[in-house]
Length: 109
Image 1 (cartoon, rainbow, N blue to C red):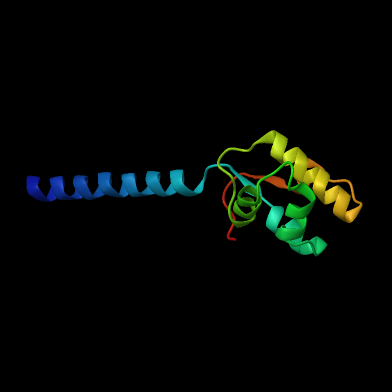
Image 2 (cartoon, helix red, strand yellow):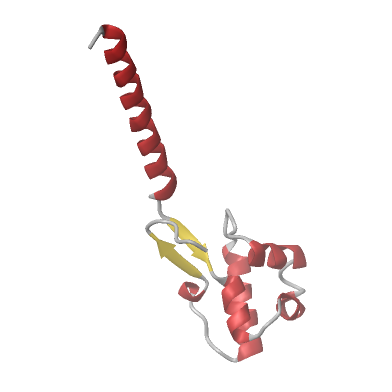
């Protein structure tokens, strides 16, 4: 094989290494799964009902956002109010683990 062929193979090999590394880094990192939406559904509680309970403490926008996607930064005071509100509505005690779940790698949603 000539030098051009060896360079081509070397270039392809380096490219494939990069693809594998990028793929691993984009799929193999830990995640926190936010479970508020699933919890509300399981308890039969609407976001609006939770908002009614928490209107003096948590904004409606925050609650609706929290049910649509995982917050990038978690406000612990808001989390505490959400847990309190759920307890007031359902009569059940909740733990942080009821709303947050650690995952080694992302699971299909």
